[in-house]
Length: 146
Image 1 (spheres, helix red, strand yellow):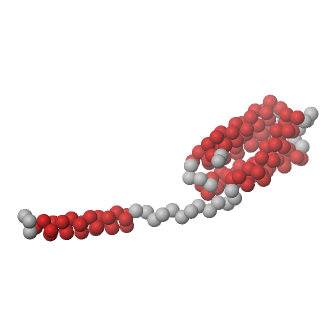
Image 2 (spheres, helix red, strand yellow):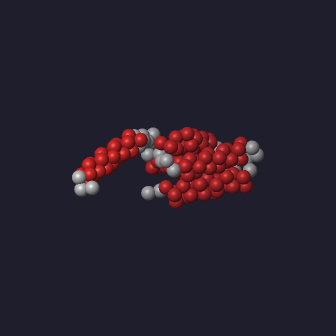
């Protein structure tokens, strides 16, 4: 047995090396770093926040909060386009599927506001959908904000 011991140890070492090499080749290649279209912070500062502020001010502080003014229309278009871009490109920002769900909720809520303004300019409906916009923003911030 003492003569076989070195041979057995050598065989075991070779088997371990072969197994490690096999496992290493079976592992998927590392995922390349995702390229960001634009940092989420920049989107917030340049597109989302100004639009939400415009809508909030118009809805709660203007005498004509239920009227679709050019300023409100521009804010809704900006917010809608940004939300649509977030939905389409969510995986470029994070692998977490919750981010896309928040973007879809934002998109849906903005579309609700557009419909409410475009219909009979229903103040209750506009306010309802704006509450959803704010709620979606707050939920996403709770989950993802640095």
